[in-house]
Image (cartoon, rainbow, N blue to C red):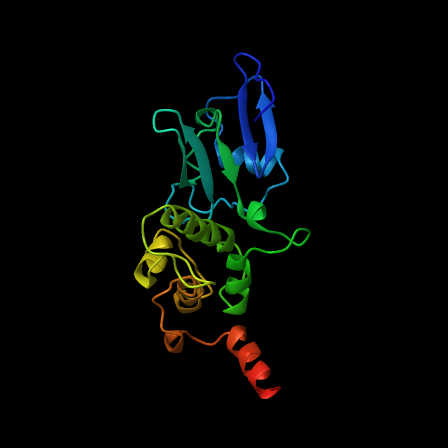
Length: 204
């Protein structure tokens, strides 16, 4: 975004990659553009009405009035591309990938077997990531290492707008709640993290 913008052009960034478009069909949605014109395919078209969460991404926008960056999740199937001038968009690929390494959200979803077909998983990850980003901006006390300022209930509420048709919500909710400092680890379901911990104790 540091490069000079030509007058009238639409400028935005996706996962740190700058895009500048001289003209845009005003009916083009962010999801349509991401899936047809970029390599970032993780947001999916599910319901097309903002009700399933499969297309959720994070939008970051500088507020000149309050002089701070606002971060919020949106349904990219309903968000018009032309409304995103000066914004930064983050998809699940922007959190982590096979080349750069996976984000702890990805690792915990995998570790709790919280994904089967994977269609809805990127949207779930981005909904949780948005909640983590905004909670960390708050005035809550700093959490222990490895946790966030989210509470268990807030972690569950973060994915309330996301639907999953095959995995089941228990492992998904458990994966999200691992970031909450108030979680009782005994309440979490089956996962590979327990297995690693037990193996480590046996080797001592």
